[in-house]
Image 1 (cartoon, rainbow, N blue to C red):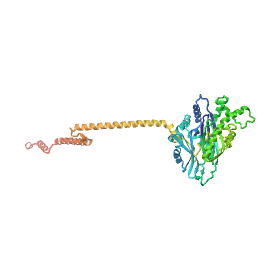
Image 2 (cartoon, rainbow, N blue to C red; image 1 turned 90 degrees about the horizontal axis):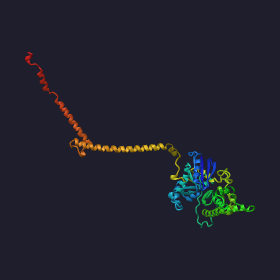
Image 3 (tube, rainbow, N blue to C red; image 1 turned 90 degrees about the vertical axis):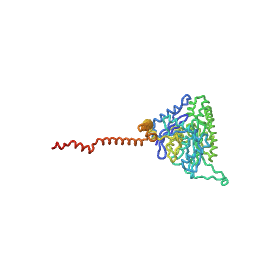
Image 4 (cartoon, one colour; image 1 turned 120 degrees about the horizontal axis):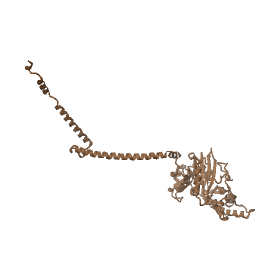
Length: 488
């Protein structure tokens, strides 16, 4: 089975093609197409051209296309339900999130990722986004001649890299809440890990604890923030600043042995990274109190994670070990640390492609639901092949139906007129004997039969009058016989 993940970002488009193996996947293709940063150019046209070129390279009937939904456009909440059935969970989510989302549930699409089964219940991460946002993302793909099978939130898909996605969600024992009187001591906090994917304009982090996903948060910080500061500091064009950041960006963990320019360059980047560190500290505090966890390590991924010494610097700021993501359990051949194969920047695209390989026991998170659900490929191919013929046949049927209705109407009208004329003629021919209600077909037929019988009787009487009687025959014979005298 072949699956293609498409991560449409503001800086580039990442494409990942994977094929399923027995219990994992094989990365067949990973490419990044940079988008122009020139404000005079329309990036939407660039995106369409890239997608159209991509669509021409695959047979869409045998390929699963998975499109990413930017995480900042998706709301995620952790919920628990006292039942396990997925269809019941999906029906309940709109009511559970109704008071927690800033838009109407009638104008939204909902889905959920089951993170664990708790006894007879289930623990999920529910997600939702507006119809307009999903339609906008879907239209981008359709403009590029791609009909995606799945539109998955980036964070939800990214979590698949750290899960046994070929297996059903783990089964956990349900923990009954206890009062403080029974257990006066505080419940020990569980260790947790954060995986931070740093994007171009925004980033997101996953929080995992006890071998399951706990939360997904969006961070309003990205590599573009560093590039803009460098562009202003050194009077560079933004494009040049981005190139310098990707090729030569670094942070000094110590100023010893560094030149004045290197220290100035490093301090400039540190000032921006401090904003990320501050936002992470606040987010960690919030998550630790909400889920009763203790952050003990963090991993970095994404293009900007390749910034030299970013991990050690964040380690100093956050006071927990922060390192680049190296490998994932599902495929040890992928190296996210070096970035030479593009895995670090294309991690989300790889995760999206994995979503297309998932089975119903642990399904992909898909925002294409209801009216947005993808049409069956068989139906689509039939419509493409026979659509024109069906339209012609439908038009012919409508014309024939209209002609039949008109013909029936004309026939009915002519029958009514003939009936009226019949009544008039019946009255005239019978001399007023049949009129009004009596001038009906039955009485008219009786009248005609009566007249026919009278005519037959007249003809019979006339024929009887022409028959010679017995006396006339005897008289004729007598006259023709010779007299006695003549005989003698």
